[in-house]
Length: 259
Image: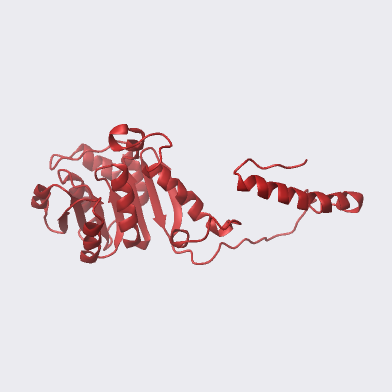
């Protein structure tokens, strides 16, 4: 049992509501920030218990901010904990918050969990996370629940929206004009999908990845270019395969290879 789960199980202070498998995920990604001078923003204050948990876990040098639509949450402020009152689907409000606080080391979206709220919050606040910081969106199981606007493979949901991140992070390798390197490609090092949680780990990647070889080849290369009559056939077959597969790719049909 890690430190966060121990705190949760022994908590007699303000109410905390968490799925139990979250604590290993938190500790896996948050432990490197312990004891450091960091900024944490949590969207969704609820009863204030998780803000106290973060304060205890990260230490006295951490500055903790919260966002909630309930005006009574303002009463939960304490030393090193500041709370902003407003809606996470209000872009103007989120931009005002950005202007009021330093860039975040960790941003946790544990707010209203509707599809619009999750998407708007990401679009407005992701760029306020530091280059080596984390963006965590939790309770993604609402994607499968109609009450929150969810549905399996339903357009407009955060899960479907976030599936684009997989393409963006690999865009340096794209051969198509429809997928180009963008700000997400240059600023994200990894994506971690868990049950109900997505962790986006930021890392500056302003240049394309480099591929290298070291050592001496000792096995005949299976993919070496053929010679003689086989080489002639390959010179005809390769461009034909290229044209066929470009056409199939355009219509998003599975690839074709002669073997």
